[in-house]
Image (cartoon, rainbow, N blue to C red):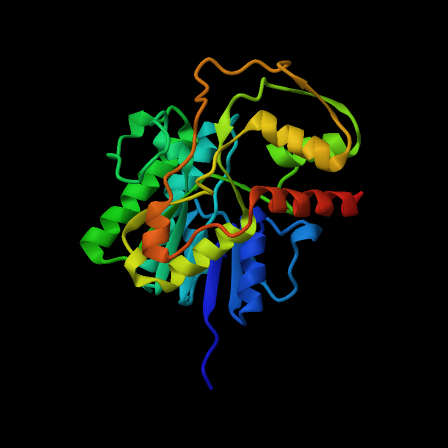
Length: 305
């Protein structure tokens, strides 16, 4: 009898981790999650093995990862702007600790979730072929992600470690953290509240979480993706103001106060990717239109009321 594929999801209790675990279980895979705490009730999956461990603590990580996995996906790390040390260590040293372990028991694929923040102020549409330069981004999170990307590309070049970096733009969908833009706006509109926002002129790229999971799955199975950095986004940027107005229209409520929040001095107005590489290498492009994805996300929050 053919054995099940096994997948380790680092950060499996988070927004994307939950959806990836759910999809993996649907495929009949054995799913293990490593995270710093157990999932909230809304993201708990009965058949997932949950391991509580801080990936920055190397000895603890080694104790908890004693076996091999077919696939490893690293979605772990903090994004805490009030604690830059914790943010940097969890992303960069967390990634290094994981690769140190998996160099001894190499999986078929190791997918690292990167970020558009790695590009810093690079002009949009952003392409993957820019030179590594940690000074390009002012964000500690961006620097940690960029150094992790460089580390993984070096490992592929020197030791054929099967790493791929998926450089993600803005994911959205059901069960996202409540402090993100789209959930904040949806809740404000559903409750017909006044809420402050910027002028909304920023152009951003949003991609539905189901499309993100599909990109991860295609990457895991595609040997041509090894040693590559691939942008994951919709390729169809939209103004923040338009998003708020769409949510307001679908929800039939909400009183956004445009211009109440000032834009940061260093705010980059246009951030969106070129996604040709994803189409060419992993045969991926998003299937869920923004309007369709937004409607299903609003429906989820309406049912939660």
